[in-house]
Image 1 (cartoon, rainbow over the protein chains, first blue to last red):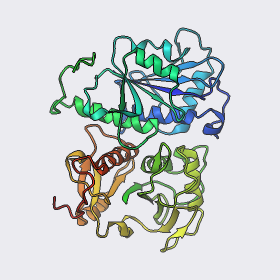
Image 2: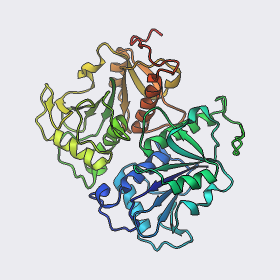
Image 3: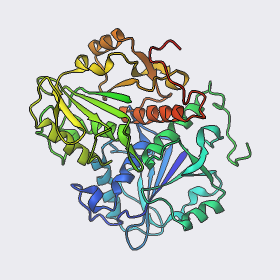
Image 4: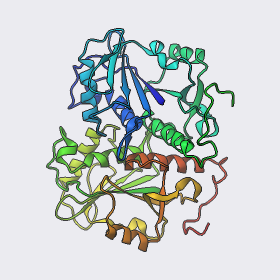
Length: 209
Length: 209
C-alpha cells in the first residue's frame, strides 16, 4: 500500500465553495483534485493499492480527508466531479474519529501530526532539492508527503525530520505535486515488475539499504 | 522543441459545450485539458520548449488546435480555465491556415495527416505494448503521439507507421494520456541535464542510434 499525503495550505474546510470556480473559491482545492487523479486513476480503473490523505488548512481547524483506493467509488478523472466528492466530505461533521463520506472517502478533524500512517513505515518528503528518487531504494509501502503551491512549513518539516523522512525529488525541473505523484507511482510500478532489478523482492522499510 | 499530439476522437469542434459539465457536453475535452496541463505546466511557469497539437474529431470535419509554449499565456493548471481557452479557439472560423486565438493558441481545419510537425523529425507513438521509452534514445525534438480513452484508429496507426514512428510505452501499467505526457517530459528533462549519460549531446533525430 503506497500512501500520498498532500498539504493544502489554503484549502477550505467547508463545503461552501463553487464548483464553477474551484480555484478561486475553495482555496485551491483544485490542486488536491489533480493529486487525487494522479494518485488513483489508471486507464481502466483505480489503483487499489494506494491511499491518499489530504490535509486542508484553509479553515479554523485543519481537516484531513482520507481516500482509500481499495474502497473508492465514483472517482472520475475530471477535477469537477472530484471536487464534488470532497465537497460532500466537507459537509460532514469532522470529529477526531474518521467519519465515512462516499465509498472510500473519510474525513476527520486533524492535521499532519495526527496521521498514524507514519508509524512504522518509511516516509519520503518531496522537495526540489531532494535526492533523485530513481537512485534510491523506495519502500513499497512508503508514505510520500507533498505540499501544494505554497509548500510545507518549517513546523511540517520538523515533523517529517522527526520521522526520519528522506527528502527526495523527481527530476531536474520544479513540478506541481500532481505531476510528482505520477512520477512516484510510475517508479514504484516499475519496481514491482518481477523482471525489474528491484522487483519482486520484499523491500525493507527501514531505509537500511 | 518537443511536441505532443493528442487525438480527441469525440472532442467537439464547436464552442457549444458547458464549462459546468465538460466531460458530458464536450466529447471529453477534459482529457485534452489535462494533457495540456501535463505538457506545459511547471511549478513556476510554462514549458517554453513544448508544442502541443490537439486533434478534435467530434464534429463534421476535424479541427486541430496548436498550443505553442513559447507564446502561451493565460494558461492555468485547472481544467475549467483551459477548457475556456479551447472554447474560444473553437468559436473561430477554422480554415486551412492557422488562425490565431488567444496568445499561443491557433486553430485550423485539419486532422492528423495534415500535421507538418511530422516532417523531418522522429515520431513516437505511445501505446501500451510499446518498447519502454526509458531504454530508448529519444530525440530532443521528437513528436509524441497519444490517443484519448478511445485510442488511435487503424488509419491513424497506418499514418504513423508510414512515418516510421517508434512505438513506445511509459511503464507497466496502462495510463491515461496526461500521465504519459508527464512521464515523457520527465525523461526528456533528465536527459537534458549535462551530467546525464545522454545529456548535453546533440541527439540525432533519425533513429540510427
